[in-house]
Image (cartoon, rainbow, N blue to C red; front, side, top):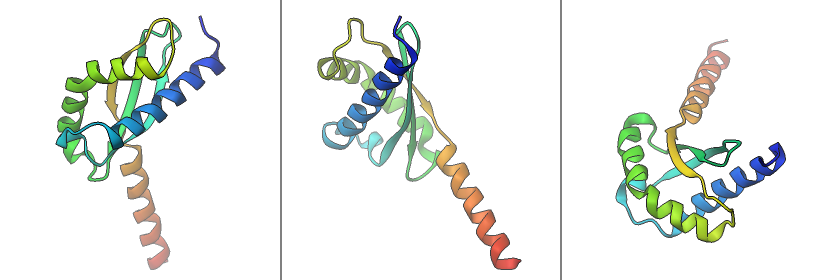
Length: 116
């Protein structure tokens, strides 16, 4: 089993390569203007949990996750060609509400500051 530092390096590389692929290689209109917020790999390297968000927010989350699921086989094959691992993890995609929550908090703080 890889140590924690190696798992983090693998997850960072996955996030970086997948982000680059989404910008340059993926033509699915469902996957435009999305970004990878995080990637986590389990200790057995069986699964990679990929967290995504979009410029528009959660209104397109179901559409985006469906697009990623349908492309997961292609993405996994392409990533395995770029990242050398003995066994390549299966990709699981999750919606990340963090950017929307941060934006909401920013607006609340700006409103408090303006009214305070």
